Every structure is written in C-alpha cells, then in structure tokens.
Length: 418
Ligand SMILES: Cc1ncc(COP(=O)(O)O)c(C=O)c1O
Ligand SMILES: [Zn+2]
Image (cartoon, rainbow, N blue to C red):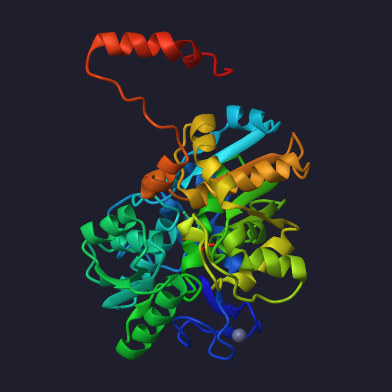
C-alpha cells in the first residue's frame, strides 16, 4: 500500500513526489510537509486498533510515519513518555487541569529523539551512508544516540558554546563532532554547505522534512493518554519552530483520520532574547532574524528554520505567542521541579514560564485542560539549574555541627504548604 502521497511546500503550496527532493522545496526553498493518503489510512487505523496495540513507543504510529517497516529502527525506546496530572503546580497558578508531558524521559533526554528516530531509520531505508546535522546540542545528542548502533555514521555541527552534558552525550555515542567557532545559525549554514558538497543526508531541523513527522507523535500520545479528550491549550517552547509545527501536524493528522473532532490551541513560548516567531505573529509580517540570545540555549535561534510552519500552527489553531525573559525562565526550573517533581532544562521550563505569565494575565481559564511540553531534561544543563537554586548548607562532619544548624534554621524546613 502506498501511504505517502508526497510533499507540499509550506510557503508556495507546490506539490512534489518523494523522488523529487530530499529536503526543501525545489521551487522556492520553503520547508516541505509530508502528505499522506488519509483515505486509505482511515481504513487501517482506529481508536480500537490503537488501544489493542501493545507497543509502548512512537513506533505504535508506524502507519503514520514515512517508513516502510522497522529496518534501521534504533534499539532504544523513543516516545510514549509520561503525561502527569500536575495538581500542585496547577493549583499554584489557579488551574484545575494542568498536565506535564515529560519528554526528558526519552533515551537521550529530549524531545528531539522523536525526530532523530524517524530520520535515522529513514536514512538506513533509503541507503544513506552519512547523516549530518546542525544543532544547539539536543538534536545532535539524539541523532548520535539513534545512530550509535546504525550502519550510517552521524557527523554533527554544534556551536562551541554547547553545554558540556550535551557534548558529552554526542561524543559518548561515537558521533563525529565538528565544534563550530560560531553560533547555531552559523553552524546550520556550514552544515548545509557540507551536505551539498559531500552528498551527506541533512537531518537539520527546518530543512529535513521528516523531523516534523517524528515530532507529531507527541500529539498522538497526548490524544491517547488523555483518553481522546483533546486538551484546550498546549504550551510549547519554540526556537526554530519545528516542535510546535510537528505537534500541530500530529493533531491535524488525527483530525483528518477522524480520530478526534476537536483541535487544541497552541501557545508558542519564546525567550525574549530570541523571539523572531513571536514578533512576526505580533507584527503580522514575515519572519525576520532576531537577536538569538538567551540562557535557554536550546531555543537560542536568530533565524527560525521552520518559522512559517510554526506561525501557521499558531494561527490555524487560534493560539498565540508569549515571550518570557531569562529571569522568568531560570525561575521556572525550580518551580517545575518543586511543583511537579520534573527537572527541566531551561528551554523546557520556559513553557511553564509562559503558562505562568498567561495564567496571571487571565488568558487561561481555571477549567481549561492545559498541557505543557517539557522538552528536555534538566541534567542537560546543570549550570543553569545551579544558578536558579539555593546553595547547599555546608556542614562539618560531626553531629554537633548538624545540631547547631538544626537549632538555627530547622524550624523553617517544614510547612511547604502541602
Ligand atoms: C529542549 C528543547 N526545547 C525546545 C526546543 C525548540 O524546538 P524548535 O527549535 O523546533 O522550536 C528545542 C530545540 O532544540 C529543545 O532542544
Ligand atoms: Zn515552495
């Protein structure tokens, strides 16, 4: 059965077959969206068939992915991450139905594993030998993880400033790392040139049309995990805009298949210092490069590479964008950890910072079913977490010292309001 119809350009709407391009629109260089034969797929997928499927990873949606079978699938489980009802965190914001989707629980500890899993398998299935990619760190770590045991080899371009934990992951998984003397945007352009010159397959976000396909599986999971009660709002941290456009693709795929009859509003959360998409939505114009500087390294992007599709996702879903400053982002790291027990990296915690701001401004109603996507683990960037936390209490290794400490401040160690 042929389930893939081809590509449609998100800029000029031209259609292409899969054989015509591997990356962007041959006509206008816009990003491409994968088009499925929904009529055929409707007959093959139902709520019941999904319920009966024992697979607990994103491969439960193989029918809706651009792959033929499992050749090239990494030997680690991606997706089907936990969705938590965050009662305490929600109560702090006056919200009754707050959920946290913890994608830090993926094998390389970020949402990017969804995209890398699909692209890595597709690379094997289409006979690629080298897969390159540019990344602030997470996409590279995830591609290195997904290809660790693959016949293909990853070559990854990361800015020299990438947090040490992300670099360590990439190196440990055995990828070739090019540590670029430049920022993410420069690494992106360099990677593209290298792919053109050496014929490597390019996984970069907002260039490879299949990353969005992997990312859409998060929306599929949300529908199932919420027992088909589509949420009212989904807060997504946004840099290049590929996660939010992927999440939207997931909801619209399920809608086209008749599995859901409602769509959520998507809220794009950007850092004030890196807010090209939020600004374009506000001004009503196209995407123009912004400054690209924030403590949340994963969303530090000057020129969003999937900006048009991200704006379409926000507009079509009747959502909106919100910006948060670095102080709000850093404060959100301990807030999420203490309110829900989930340790998020700054970019991920930004989604909560955005929600807190919108809730305070009355843009979220107390009964709105609201999801925040925690897109990466806090262990990715412990320096920022330490900046946002209290100091440990230093104590000599004897009980007399502990007694003095307890006498001095022990009374304040209880009563956190539970
Ligand atoms: C943890 C985390 N959150 C959010 C994002 C933003 O995703 P996108 O660049 O697709 O908007 C990224 C991208 O690197 C990320 O790693
Ligand atoms: Zn085009």
